[in-house]
Each structure stands twice: as C-alpha cells, then as structure tokens.
Length: 258
Image (tube, rainbow, N blue to C red; front, top):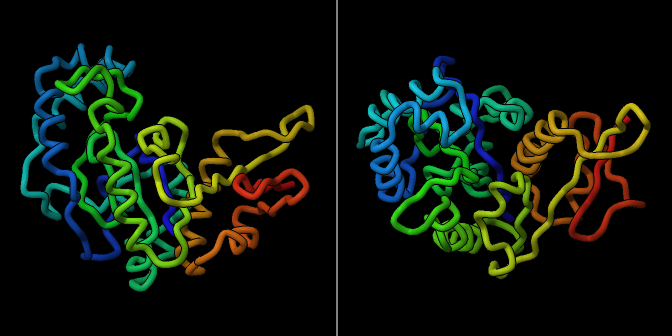
C-alpha cells in the first residue's frame, strides 16, 4: 500500500529536527533542470507565473539562485519536517513518529512535488515554491505535467511494487497533484478517501482546511497502525471523523464528523 500526499507552500525552516536520519531525493537531475529554467526568470516574472506577491517573487528567485548540490543537512531538510501546511500539521510527524514509524513512512508514504517529482518522507529538500499546476514552459511542453510525463507514474509504480501489503494506492493528494500520476496506468486499486463536514446550511461537503488536516491525519494513522488493507481504513477516527458507509463506495470511503 502506498499513500500519496501533496506538498505544502508553507515551510518550516527553523524548528529543531527530531532525527538526523535522511535520504536523498531520487529525481534530483530533473529538479536541477527545472531550477535552471527558473533561474532564467526575474523576480517579477516569477511573481506573475505563480500569482504571488513581489516579496514572495524575490524570495523564491533567491531560493533558485541558492539551490545547490549535493544536498546536506546544512542546506536542506527532510520533506516531512520541511513542509508545514495543513496536511503536515494534521500528520504531526514531529510529535507522533518514532524511529520505527519513520521506517514505515519511508515505505508507505510518497509526496508528489512540482520540483522534485516523488519524495519519500525523509528525502532532503531545499526550500522552494513550484506548484504542480504552474504553467511553466520547458523543453518538454508548456506545463509541469508535460515536463514530468510518465516519470512520476513510473516511480510511484516501482515504489508500490516494493511497498508492504496489497497493490493499493490511497490517494490523499489534491486533484492538482494527483493529476501528475496516471492512476489508470498503475496496476493497482486506487482508493480516494473523502472527508466531509457540515456547512452552515447543514449540507455535508468537503471543506478545505479540515479536509487537508484529515488527509495528513489519515497518512499518519496508516503509518502508526501499519495498515495493510482497504477495509482497515474504515477504522480511521482521526480528528473526530468516522466512516459513513451509507454514502461511501468501495473506492471512495467517506468520513464525516459532527
């Protein structure tokens, strides 16, 4: 089984790391080529490309200038501790995971990235911003989907073949990032959990902030409970969510709270 996650725009560059363990990203050559493309752009062009403020444009232009290899613990941090958005706050790996959990996470969690392709939790990552949906022109086309082509799918498939349990992908990534994987091409069952809350009118729907945290919670729960079956996912109860069989399908289990 393999859980897929999106990365985060918010980064934690300062908190002490709970472990010295780390691994090297496996698609670093592709990342270096993308960095060279980004280095041709001015801060203003980066702001326009990513629809971000001039300040963030300057910050990320400098990050691309500062990008260097080899990756070390002095210029990079493990992905699971660098990313600091809602998904990763829901996961809370810093507090939850012991050494055995980190070993399990390396086997069953993959983070999809616009710059790095596919990351394992302990892969070193240098600070960056490059969302998968960015319309970046490269020698391979006019988008990052065109740039990566089948490379992300191929590595996910290889990792899935080596992962423990059945050939199941638990898709906890956003549509933007899941779109970088040809899920139909995987020789695997794809399960996409859905997390719903009631809005002010009482209607059940996916609300961005709690749903993101729930995705991180489920990934952590899968790691800590060594989940090896789709049926076991129904026992997830993180964040107050509970499996709701009446609105679920076999490949879209729905979890509600409240």
